[in-house]
Structures are given as structure tokens and as C-alpha cells.
Image (cartoon, rainbow, N blue to C red; front, side):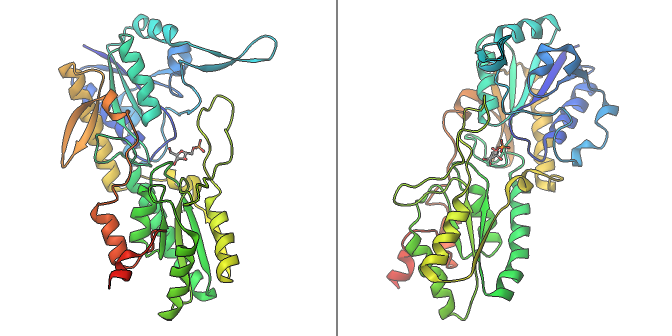
Length: 369
Ligand code: F6P
């Protein structure tokens, strides 16, 4: 009989509940107990936030968005902001306390579902002696060593549907519509949704963009009797002159920059350079919401079941990963070394160029012909 604890950390992503569902059922079939720590690691610090999970508690949740356990991207136990008696914020390390409570509560393994930040924390706990298994989550698809993270397919579907809808209004008003999508420093969501959603221009962090090239494409559209354009821009995209866009350091305790603003800036530039009526919108957290697609649901269920197999085989400090069509285990340390970027030689990039999408750089294909 084993006692397993699950946590969900970082930004939520469609499919979190499907992982929880699979873990609870796969453990239950083995006669193991499962607990869920609310809001990341809160359950290890306050028993009220540690909840028993039975199959009846997870009935039907595989198809729902969000996480029944709650999540946070401000709760790093190794540097936790805590208010002292004088009302000042101090950064404290509560990892020893969490490890002590993990052992005291009699857990055999912690299944940590998260992106690079949460998996980095999980790995640090593994180094301290906690048996840990990771499950790769993020709509950004920027984790190394797995072909896909769950949540990405749903985010792309949401962004693509939005682009489909924007075509008709852009066309009716002969406008340029600039859509900013999420993805941090990687252009996966922008590239996949932009190609599938008929974008004229896709700007990704991996290719610093030249505003003049973007405007040339928009003006060239008119030569083909197309008076409107759709521009998809990843929140982490930057110019070839070194401009990047962020809204500051974010709330206290959050060590990352909050990205955003590039869409509005690009729209203003297009308006000035081409004189075209231009609007911008930010899809934002819409991309993180809703029911997971069939692909994400299945992937999340497979990840959850595979994580429980790793517990059985005692392969700790590893993350379940999708490799071609199979489930494999990779050391968490390898998955978090660096963020996965779009490969500029991939067929998706080639496809975009072949079908005439401007990627913000020189259109060498049309120059060659
Ligand atoms: O990592 C997922 C993600 O949605 C990023 O694409 C985005 O930059 C960030 O999280 C937004 O975080 P928050 O929910 O804290 O605004």
C-alpha cells in the first residue's frame, strides 16, 4: 500500500484535471491512497489544504478546465514571500518544513504537475530526498525532452478559432487586425495558430522582426486584391532593433517579467507606416481556459497513468514525456535545463514561408523566384 500526493503548480492549463483523474484511478486500482495538496505546496504547510482524493471526488473532471486543487505561480517554497510582524515582506525558505511534513504525513511519492518553474522546484525537493515524479504541463509547449506538453493543443485551438472569427470582421472593414497570443519566450502558439488560422504575418520570439517587412506584406496583400490582413504576434516577440515588450516585474514574489504590449505597439506602427485602419487585441487568459481538446485530454490521461507506473518502478526525479507516440521517462534535470524553442528549420516554418506568410524577416523565397 502506497500513499501518493499530487500538486498542480504554475499557471493552469487545460488537462490538469485529467491528469489528477488518471492518477487517482490508477492508484485506486493498485490499492494506493491519493491526496491532493491545494494551491501548489500549501497542503504541506497546512493540513486543511491537504485533501484525500477518492474516485468519487474526481468523477467526470477529465473534461473540465482549470484544476480542482488550485494553483499558484507565487508559491516557490525555496523563496516564499512572508509578511513579518512589522508588515514587511521577507523571503523565507520553507522547503525543510515541507520535506519534514511530507515524511510525517507518511507519503511515498509526490507527483508534481507543472511547467519548468514547478518542475525545477520538484527537482530541488528530489535532491533533498523527496521521491518525486514530474508531469509536463504548459500551454506554451516550451518544455524540453517532451514532444508536447498538455494544454498546448487547447490553447492553439482557442487561438485558431479566434482568428477564424476575426477574418470576417477584418474583411468587412478593410482593416488590419493584430492579435497578441501567449507563449512566453517561445513562438509555438503563435506559429501553430497563425498557420492554421490563415494569418498573413506571424511574429515569434525566435525571429526578431523588421517592421518594414511586416508592412511590405500588408501592402502586398492589396496587389492581390486583399484589403485586410491578420497579424499574429507572440507576447515574447521582439524587434530586430532589440526592442522587447513587458509590463514590468509583476506582483511581489513573482520572479518573472510579465510579458505583453507588443500587439498594441505593432498595430500602432502598422497604422503609421501603411496608413491602414488597424486594431489590436490580446487573447490573454482565454487561451488557458475551457475544456481540454481530445488530444490534450488523452495526453493528460496518459501522462497521469504513466506517472503512476513510474512510482511503481521507483523511477524518481524523472518526468513522464511524449516521445513520438510513446510514453517515456526523462530526468527532470534535463527537461528544465533550457526552454524549448521553435526550430527555424522545421517544416512548420517552411510551410509558413511556402504559403506566403511573413515571419517578420526578409522574404528570401520570393526574392529567389
Ligand atoms: O506560462 C503560461 C502563461 O500563460 C504564459 O503564456 C504567460 O506569459 C503567463 O503564463 C501569464 O501568467 P499570469 O497568469 O501570471 O498572468
